[in-house]
Image (tube, rainbow, N blue to C red; front, side):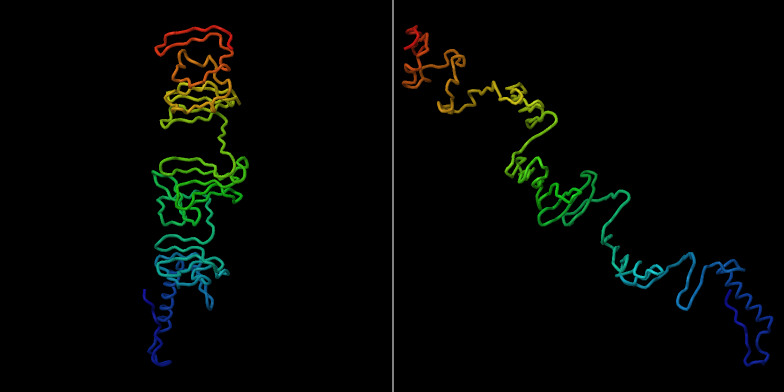
Length: 334
């Protein structure tokens, strides 16, 4: 219904205006429309109240568009009564901002979400995309790579720290290396700088400091060939060491805390003149270590056997180049 105006006439008392009855009917009709729109028809229930500067709506339902001024970081346009510097404002086109205490906390624009301050989540944070080379610090995920950490720093791209804010390891800038700092464990000692890296052809575990590189395990430590199936060496829990051929046949074994014994070196692996007198300890080679006919004329240097070497000789065979015995000498030596 359109608003109904009461006719007042041209001048007072000229008899041209609405009668009292007709005017009262218009008043009633106007109020019925207002009470119907803002209440039950007989009572107002809209929650509207007003002062000289504030209109209050108690629990309104807005079916159209509510427009607000831009506001600012210190005076947001959508705010809380009694806390005027906290709320929502519109700092630029296509941008929504949230401010608390007059400080911007959240920007939402066409590029995404930008948060100033710490982010605390009571649930999980699950990224759904890959990171990019230009990301300063990003967490990503792909179905092939799983969790991805990407960073850019002047010294390190990624730094992992413990709850004491001490560095556990770093990935140096622009590398695929992992660097462990000094004293990463007290056992390693000062200046141990454990490095694990690949140089394009070989992989290395390096102690770049002044200490030792120790391998320690509760069980055996195995060193395998590139097939991963054949032992090269095995360090046993009790302190013994096993050496193996490539075909996994045992080469030698040491007792716990002892030295390796029975190590064989094939003659094909010994270079000519590699073993000299200086490398053979006194009495290191005795008769039981000579194979039959293993020492012939060409392996005896001139004057190599003198009276001093014949002191304990009981039998001496003198043979020609064909191996036939020319002379047999029996005696106790000189």
